[in-house]
Image (cartoon, rainbow, N blue to C red; front, side, top):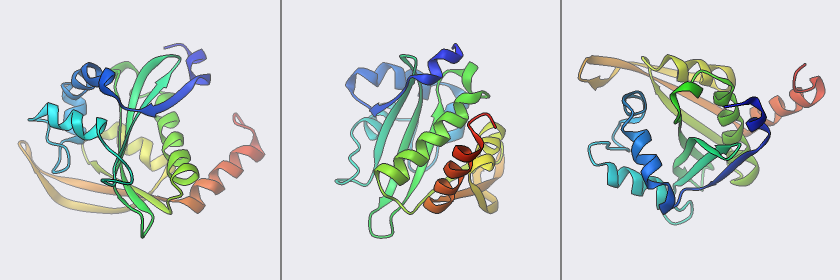
Length: 188
């Protein structure tokens, strides 16, 4: 994808027209390994797709969004377990096209997460869980969120037990980072 596509970032609700794309992404072994847990059961792809597509932030406390850059679908942001009383939510995210996973697109997705969570949904905090073997996600989250916990040998996977990392970002941290970028210039 050309860098020119980064100036045309669109975030929209996931709809029926996205089912084949989501199915293709969810069949990708790297994405499956990164997001398979008790919330998302990839052994039943239709149910996983329905979870993303049919989510309603106010009805069921979830919101599935597709991120497009330059007219191409590049990633998914899913706010799960939105708690309107405490104003927090878990965020599940991934970049679909493999060639974009270790690129600037990770930073774009992270910025969109903050924008939506804190400017649109008016949340106080977002958090994410990352498997220890997902090095790209760990690197991306460590750049923009605080690592709040490492749960040792927490998840049992076919290859054995694995650590689980918990990351969090507060609205105040997001807005402070935006102010720093505004003062320094985006390339500063």
